[in-house]
Length: 176
Image 1 (cartoon, rainbow, N blue to C red):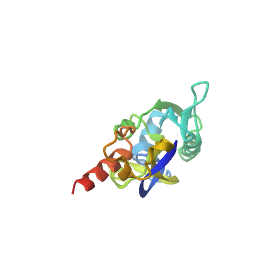
Image 2: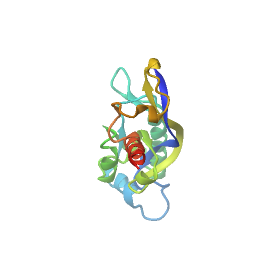
Image 3: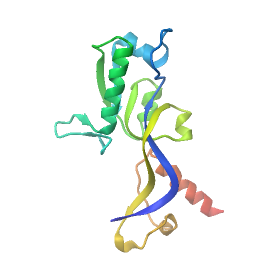
Image 4: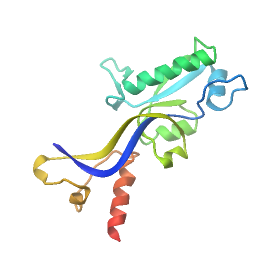
């Protein structure tokens, strides 16, 4: 296998949250208020987004994003003075993670989610901790080296990811 570069634009992967900020002396609002009132925080995690968020051999979520989210939970516990804050884990997919944040099913998503302008209009992001170009895996013998080389070929990608609009945007630009 080799990778064909699809686009030069950078993709930032970040932790998403709705309404997180350091707890202040003022009245809590948004997600922090909900967490304080319920005594619980729900973390959305991906089951197979290695090395960011995935299940170990005992089906427990682990990974770099999970480690970062656990640090956030520790900070929330300290800021809200809730050392016994209950932490619930909720599996999410690339298609449902943003809706579950928006409707309050999860309070924080820990995985490999692209921080895009469109998504920033829907949810808040923490600092980006990984930056990558979108690539496609193809057979070495395929002679595919650019996105243009994929013209007329079947492409498979994960629904709900930023590669879908990227590929569609390329196709639309090629029609003109």
